[in-house]
Length: 382
Image (cartoon, rainbow, N blue to C red; front, top):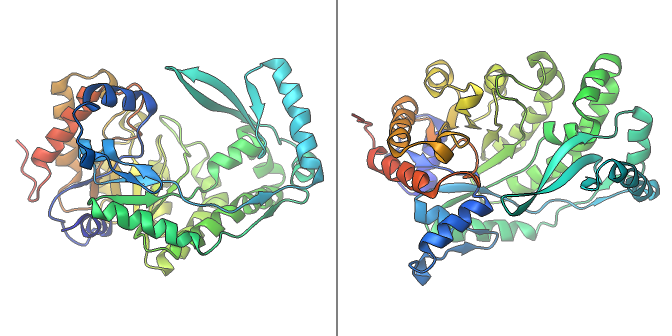
């Protein structure tokens, strides 16, 4: 099988592919530095692979088959009051902390240096009152994405295929921008006291997401990923009832748009997301990606309970194992993931998040060498 057929077969769960395929969300700068320090002087020119919107040199060197990527989005315009309000709140919050900055969507972010690289951490959403949200969004409008940009997405997709690599373009959903707009506390407040307004907030956020999904559905890419972290370690952010009421209708519509054009859909979220699985299955989601083990996502249990209805991607721990584990521990966990997830198909091997700045290059190499040794069907792991 080529990489497209193999990944599609894995996600459809109709039969086992020829081998277990692999995916990685992304690779952080410090991990890239480790890689460059080790391999920069030994990589041949034909091993440097830069797609139109993604450098996959490290991905291919390590042996990954796929990764998500960005893609064009619609332009957004705001009304006359918006910039004034942003400036006003920036002054307010920078008096509290000089590293705070208020973004145009109402997110309060703290900019810091982490391991020598700039990072922005979302602190809260500041639009906690209906009147402020209304003022902020007066005149808000979302533009169209030019159809000619579909050609750019297709070009990147086909260039990846020339290197036996599948780019999976991403389109955001709702939880993260909702938290970044009104904040977690106000989500609960509006859900109880003004659910119609909360639905209006959700509808507004989703205008751009729907346009981007419609755009990607016109492309030739076979798989689209929806990243939208909606869980903590140990529990979801919203109760299942709230998630079903306010979020699932939008996820269902996104899936319908993709499926209508023959695309498969992966949903990304870290954290303990299993309580939402029955909803995902009900609306026809093809796969969940991340399966963060330290958050409580057990691959063996998920496979046995849901594996005939939902494909699973991930479960190699990026927060403890790959940064701090021994080679023997990495080998054992890699074999366990393949043993638990692969039989019968419906599984793609992956670290549960990016290869982060904390991950050790040697552990990633050990993981991928072990994966490649045991990935062929029928799975037979000692």
